[in-house]
Image 1 (tube, one colour):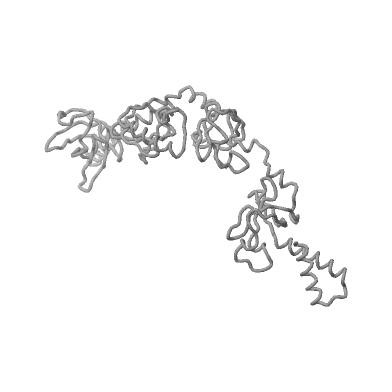
Image 2 (image 1 turned 90 degrees about the vertical axis):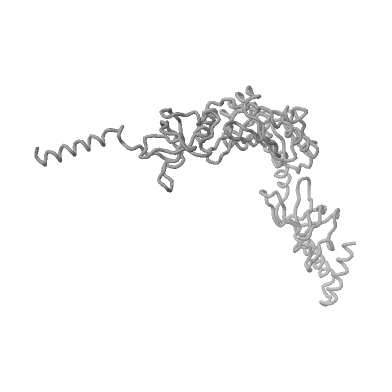
Length: 414
């Protein structure tokens, strides 16, 4: 056979070999889960062939598994392994049985979340925010207090917040350690090792269906009928057609709210406006005040910049004084607007409860605030007195005029 024909035949065999996928070296990455064949067991090592350029090693803690006893493995057994390192510093393929078990558990949890399946958990710890639970294979999750069935946490079965309530809630949470709780997954992030669970989505399954229905047809700006489901110092929770959300303290009323409990009680019917929906409906913000007329807008319509109005000093602070000139209308007299003279202590000029005349310098609708001046009114009064004195006694000298004006201002003040 000619040399040329031999080379041609050799190249043909090489091409045929390379095209045969069964003979190609497989490529693996960290995290891959593959089936391999046990080749040998010796000195606490399990050697497995997964079709890589070298056989893999499983050793130490990577052999531990709740579902597989490695000591009972024999050559030829098929085993599912996790690729820890395709190649370590010594060029060895490092595999794990333990991590395969945990990875499988995460895959099962991802399926459970997607299908909204019930996940069994066991409480292992309680903290201020809720419960830490064991799910499976050393994987832990968290159930926030707000996602627990209220009957577990509050004696009344209704969410409450207060000075005496928080300690009682913590005691009840602590008492749940060791208990089994059925949950559904509401958040899952394997990279961050973060699992957030909800018991309410199991116990309130009917509400969940209604919630999804309401969520699908609800947009920001919509008005909903609901009931008060919880009261806290920072606002109230509203359940509107299964869609629960928070009316923050700032959205309860146009006036300042000192005591939420004095305004509402659990079970009260209420109409709300949807002002925010985020995280696929996990966080819903409602407003009550936006369905009411803004009294500030109506009240301020009577005034304009430059008006001189009467008011009462509500508070004296280091930088000036706050004055109320009408219901719901408050303004600040800055320290620089208290007097023509240098003022070091506003309390030397005005006091709480004092009736004053002030000039409106500015109106801020966004901040619902007025800029006021006391000295501008005093200047105007002084100008008017000077005009009156000059008109009555035009013959006075400059010194006599100054004395006459001082006497007239003193008399007007009296």
